[in-house]
Image (cartoon, rainbow, N blue to C red):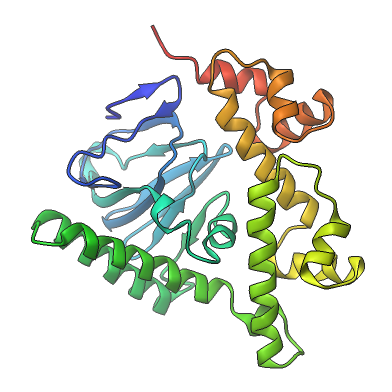
Length: 291
């Protein structure tokens, strides 16, 4: 069961360590629609498990890894009671690694979820599973510097994903290796800038100047790098900011829209519903604490 749930917002109870919670879950129990500010990582050990995001079910099994980014609405479905299964469920406050260059782009690349299938990515899955199993052993057998070691393993976990996901030769083919890595660094900086200034009046000309490209060249390269257009990336960041405001009881929908960088309420409502599959008002109601 979820210990602390206000509406659909879960507050993670980090009891043993300051930023990590690990469950050896063997319960035949479903978890209702909810979200949290933690990153969630699920690795089945025996039997399958199902995560539902945007009304789509994703079922995966042993040696697969499912990653749910912060703020994602989801619910979990356990196997039937006669096949309870076993899985590791880890909740991790990724704020510790956010200051590291490139992590913002990495987290964004995982939205709305990431399924690392053993069948599709056998070597990557094997490496990531080994990190999670080592984290589990450390978590259960608490020794001096356990938390520090777990953090170091989590950094290696995400760096391994990042190096696979941001392979410069695949993102920017047809140019020299040195230029490929230069472009990766440039667009990581651009993504960081967008995150830090998403509520301001950002335009593509300024971002192109920041990266040192023409507007047309920048737009094409940005999509190669991030998988979405610059406009879509900016809207995702504004919606994420809006979510943090919507859970506050005394801020109107109009004020949320303006403070999140939207120039009109109608645009905010349209983009929010397309992204979150509910209106801002419905989202605010879902997050209202239950009496």
